[in-house]
Length: 228
Image (cartoon, rainbow, N blue to C red):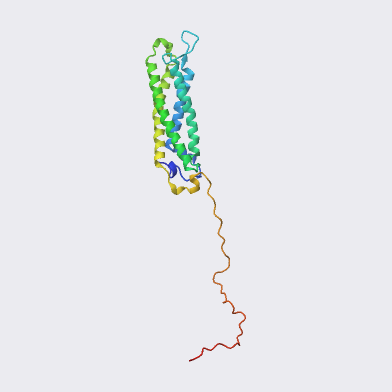
């Protein structure tokens, strides 16, 4: 895994490195997923509807508007989700609370895995409806390129979102390195700085005279021990 520490990230509050962030496999997968989703919903919106024989617009996928609506919805939500998770990845290392990091990773696992499944459904749905589309429904192959692009990049999106799910699971399995955090970090509270220690400027080897010896008379008689 990239990085060391809590759920794949380094020490909380470390400086953000944009070059290293872009080079991470997770970031590359998110950018690819963002591009693929944009191609899918963009192709359907721009050329996915035709008005053959009437003023009403029909979906190029066997005139099934549900197919176009499904592909557009899945692609648009995936497009916005990629932006959200890219921003979350950028801020992830700044999250000091281990509990919040765990929630972010679990959200990534759940959403990425669920959206990989929805992209699989989208690919199967669009491919099935495209096979049922007759040439008479598409004069001059109108919208055919857009339909093929939507199907192709729906297929690619399955693997990019599955890869994001695997990366998120790896971050979760990496767990927490407790040595990078203090007790306050567990609850998201800033650490409390201890009071500074005051050191004495006086030397420690100064001589102190014993008590009650300052006023002794040097001429006073000394006590003689009696001899028995």
